[in-house]
Length: 121
Image 1 (spheres, rainbow, N blue to C red):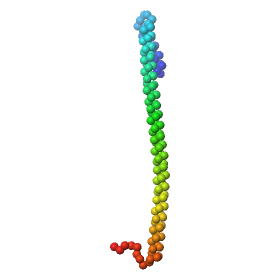
Image 2: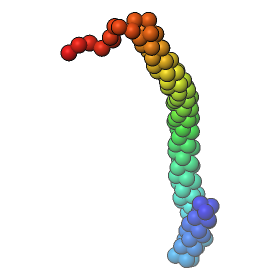
Image 3: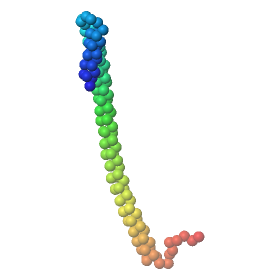
Image 4: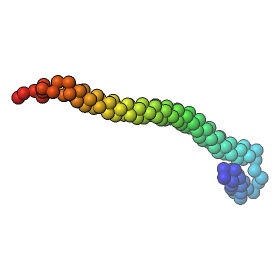
């Protein structure tokens, strides 16, 4: 697309120069044409370089975001596993505690049938 622009500008300049004058284009005319072409090429190259630099920066920041995200997921997975294990252990402890309390209360009642476990109010 940019080469097409350059060719179009060059052709336009040649037509304009040859149409405006009866004489052939001079070396200065060719220099002006080349300067115009080179200016457009230079602007295109500068934009390409800017796009390249922006691409490099985006890739670097993207890689950092991916790494950070992976670390968060790994940490989250670890926290989820730890949390689930604690829930399971907590439920086991509650069940065992309830069983021990009931067994202790029952044994106390059987061993000391005349004593009460409730406080008088």
